[in-house]
Image (cartoon, rainbow, N blue to C red; front, side, top):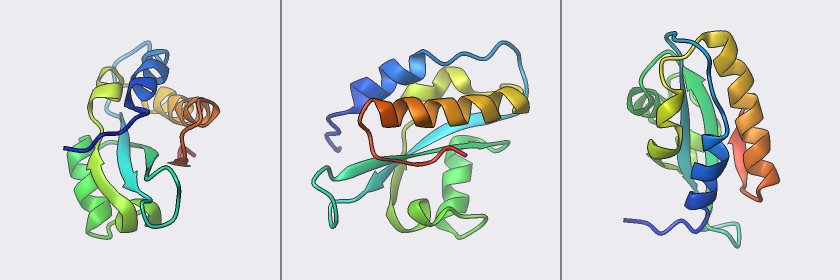
Length: 115
């Protein structure tokens, strides 16, 4: 088990994001390991996919449509903060992905993805 000091902040920020409908797209967060290059050893990747977050993480790690940061530094999926952002419409997911990444950056987290 890892201690991530900003995890409560991630819950708070993600909790402000809401979708209005149902769909097939999921927002997901991946914990990134930067212990070799940054004072704060963790960062977060924000993504969206039609696949369940755990399956999409496995795809990243296998090099399938992989973001380099997740392929090289991905540790685990952070399920809790975005549990309410599963099965939402794709258009809303695209908007929320970008807004969530910006809000997490504004809260002081090191963020990859979110585009």
